[in-house]
Length: 265
Length: 287
Ligand SMILES: Nc1ncnc2c1ncn2[C@@H]1O[C@H](COP(=O)(O)OP(=O)(O)OP(=O)(O)O)[C@@H](O)[C@H]1O
Ligand SMILES: [Mg+2]
Image 1 (cartoon, rainbow over the protein chains, first blue to last red):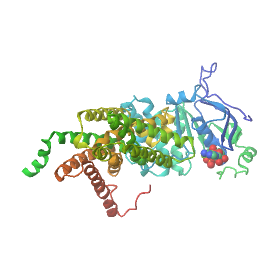
Image 2 (tube, each protein chain N blue to C red):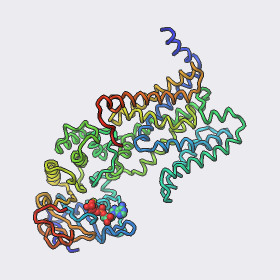
Image 3 (spheres, rainbow over the protein chains, first blue to last red):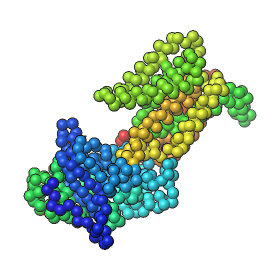
Image 4 (cartoon, chains in turn cyan, red):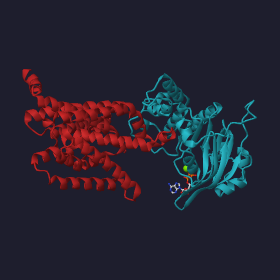
C-alpha cells in the first residue's frame, strides 16, 4: 500500500510500550458485486481516538468499505478486525455504530425521534429492552448534543433531511459506540447542521471514540479529520490530511484536479 | 334502559356465548398485536398466505381426529419456511413465491376436503365455528395465545427495531434473520388461534385491519399495539353480540365490525383521518 504514514498514536502517556489494537483494521480486503470489482486489496488501519476522513470519487468504494466493515457485504478476500476482536463480537458488545449513506427506513413508521435514539441503547439493556434511568439520560444527552431536544417527540419522518441525519448520529452517541462509521453525514446538510455534526463528532473523538467519516467536502477535511484515506477501488493514500490531499493524488483519485481549497463535485 | 341491559345480559346466560366471546376476544387481541408488525413490514399478503396454507393441515386434523392446531401449525410454519426457501433459492420474487406456495397449499387442502364426509365440517373450517368450540379447542387456543403474549411481551421492542431498521439491529449484534423468523413463527401461531374464531377465509382480516386502524390513530408504536388490541377486542364483542341477536355468521360479523372501526379511523382520525386532512387542506402524505 502506498500510504505515507499509517497511524500517529495519539498521546497516551504510559501506553507507548503495548499500544492497544487499532479501532479498525482492514487487511487485504477485496469485494466484488458480481462482475463489478468494488474494492481491491484494500488495507488500512485507524488508531483509537481519531477521526479519519474517507475520500474518493463517486463509485470509488467508500460505502462498500463501510458495509464490509459492518459485515453487511461479504469480502471475497481479506479480513476485518474491530478493536482487536472479531467484527461480530464487537457488534454484539455494542461497540460499533453505523449511519448509512441513505437510511433505508420507512419514514412513516410510528416512532418518535426519542424512540429512534433509544434504539441505540438496546445493547445496554436486558432481553426485553426496557429502558432504565441511565438509558433515558443517555438519550436526553445525545438529543441535546445534536440540537434535537425540541424535536424529541416528533415522529421521525416529520424531520428535515439534515435533522434526520442528526437523529441517527444521536443514536450512535447514545449507543456509546467506540467505532462509529458515518457514510456521508454531510450530504444534503446545511452549514449550521454540518457545524453541529462536526462538533459532535469531535466531542466523540475527544471521548476516545474512533470515527470513520466519508465525505465529499474536501475543504472541510483538514479541520475535521486527524487523518484521511483516499480510495479509488484500491487504497491510494492514508495519512495526515495535508499529505493525502496533494494535487497529484487528487488527480489520481478524482481524475480532475479540484479547485484549490474548493469543494469537489 | 332495560332493553339494552337485556341485549347485553341475555346472551351471557348461554354457555356457548360465553365461550364464543372468550375465543373471539382472545383471538382478536393476539391477531391485533401481530397485525401491527404486519402493517408496518408490508407483510399483509403473508398473513393471507399463511391462513390459506393451513387448510390441508386443518383438513388432515379433522380426518385423523387430531387437535386442529397440530395440523394447522405444521402447515402454517411449513409454508412460511417454504416461501422463504423459494424466494431465496430462485430468482422468483417474494410476492410470486407467496402466491405460488399459498395457492398450492390451498389447492392441496381443497383436494383433501373432498374426502370430508360432512358439509357442516367444511363450513366450519372455512368460516369458523366459534359458537360450537369445544373445551379442548379452547384449551389449545388459550395455550397458544398465552405463548404469543409472553413472546410479544418479552420481544416486542426487538421486533419493532427489526421492522423499522434491520441494519441497526445487525449493527448492535442482533440477528435480523432470527427476528424475522420469530415474527413469522408468531404469525403462524396467531393465524391458527384465529381459525376457530373467524375461519380460514377471514383470518387475514384479523391480522391486517386492527394494525391498520391503530396506525391511523397514533405515531407511537407502543400505543399502536394497545389501540389495535382494544379496537380488535371491541370488534370481537360487538360482532359476536350482533351475530347472536341478528342470527348471522359470527366470524363475518366480527370482521365487519373490524372494518367499521377502520372506516371510522380512516374518516375521523384526529391527525391522519380524511376529514381532518380536508379541514387542514393539506396534501395526502406520500407512502
Ligand atoms: N449492490 C450493488 N450491486 C452491484 N454493484 C454495486 C452495488 N453497490 C455498489 N456497486 C458498485 O460498486 C462500486 C462502489 O460503490 P460504492 O457505493 O461503494 O461507492 P461510493 O464510493 O460509496 O460512491 P458514492 O460517493 O457515490 O457514494 C461502484 O462501481 C458501484 O457501481
Ligand atoms: Mg457511497
